[in-house]
Image 1 (cartoon, rainbow, N blue to C red):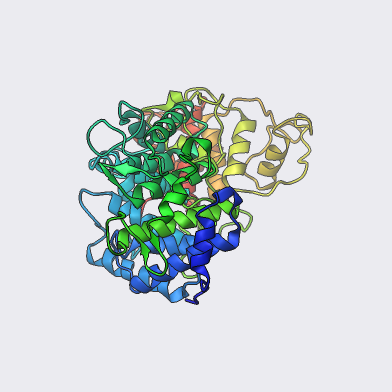
Image 2 (cartoon, rainbow, N blue to C red):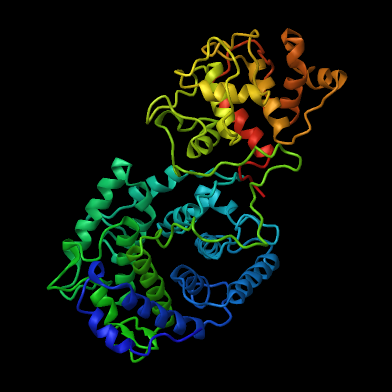
Amino acid sequence: MKRKTASFLGLLLIFSSITVSAADSDTVNAIVSDAAEYVYKTTGNPQVGSTGGEWAVIGLARSGAEVPAEYFENYYQTVEKYVKDCRGVLHDRKYTEYSRVILALTAIGKNPADVAGYNLLKPLGDYEKTIWQGINGPIWALLALDSGSYEIPGNAGTLATREMYINNILENRTADGGWTISGDVADPDITGMALQALAKYQDNESVKAATEKALLRMSEIQCENGGFSSRGTENSESCVQMITALCELGIPIDDERFVKNGNTMLDNLLTYYTEGKGFKHTHEESGSNQMATEQGLYCMAAIKRAIEGKSSLYRMSDAARSDNTASPVSGLAGKNPDVRGTDIVSPGKTFADISGHLSRTAIEALSARNIINGKSENSFEPDSTMTRAEFAAIVVRGLGLPIKSDAGFADVTENDWFYEYVNTAYFYNITSGISETEFNPNGTITREEAAVMVTRAAELCGADTEIDAFAARDILAGFFDYVKASDWAIGSLAFCYDKGILPDDAEEIKPKEAVTRAEIAQMLFNMLSLSNLIQGEK
């Protein structure tokens, strides 16, 4: 790394007297550069671990410091070997081990869903095991999952959702409105971490109220010098967590609630810093502390990113993917080139009326990508029916298809919200009209119609959907009402049952009955998973 801090001490003296909102970027860059150089020198070969490992990698990667590419590549090779040696089990009880590594891999553009063949996201899908170690479990699971907007993979335990982790954090507040590891008095370290995890969910009224109460409590317990004391000891890491929380929340460091006697938290943090030697844990220490230094670096990186208007420390969608790391949602070979996966744009999206529903995971996965919508902001109406036009819309969005022109249906006009979706679905042969001139957009879709359309969509995605008549009859023979299915739907129904797109645990197909919104969400989710267009379990 090149040293760019010849006049660093003078800059530090200037910086300590101003607030972040007024600080010039050169000064902040100098501080980040100096801290990064120290961390780079002291962790030349980062390992899997909280010190000398992931936090160093995260700080260096998110700071934008001049770090040789091989540094991060060597770390990844170390992680691969470690994961392979322990057969994918980083820890049997402390699931923050997975969260920490996921954050580091995401920061350097690697794919945590496939490390030496293991999906490190999978353990975070087990709710009970993740929360076993206490409040740290859900906090860091949420941060890790949201860092790359990752889908929560299925598992054999209690399937977690983002809402479950959010609720767990909210339910474990202290009486005074913050969070702590033990006891019932808010601790700035844990409160800062909890606020970081909840930062993305401020549109949730309960989260917003809890956030405001916690910020008020932290303001009340802030020391007169701008710092914080944790368990009776003033220390740098407490400042780090609260500063990082403000950055995640988009709150200026010089917010009046957190200025005491003219001192901001950043003013206090810099009193622990020694040029070229990193950060101390406490003022009483004679030298720097490695953990405090690594945390100090990623905190300074968070400030730098805030000043530059970049995404926050833990919102890592801007992290460049490595060339040798394939996306787990690349699709099947042979898919139509117009088909593409869709990104998560509303992480944690859920509805009050799907709690405990068998199709909850599917509904939340599609809703997070804006593939399917609720009937209102908080209601999905899983047992309601769906129209042909609504179905065309979710399939077109689910496959990420480009919009196509007029199909010529008299009952589908440019003023209709579904105009482009119906035309596109028809263009790609996913849907057809009930005649040459009519589509019947408001007609209710039946189970056999849904099976045909999903099968055509699967074919577009590259799936082999061909099933001969004899094989189809054999697959459907277990359903005593399969003879009621239309001849044109037999092959598609057989494909959907054979591939698990439709569940085979019922005694009847009920081919001509209206299919529910929840059933359609599950069918589309299963098809997209089969087509490798939604990240699944590995």
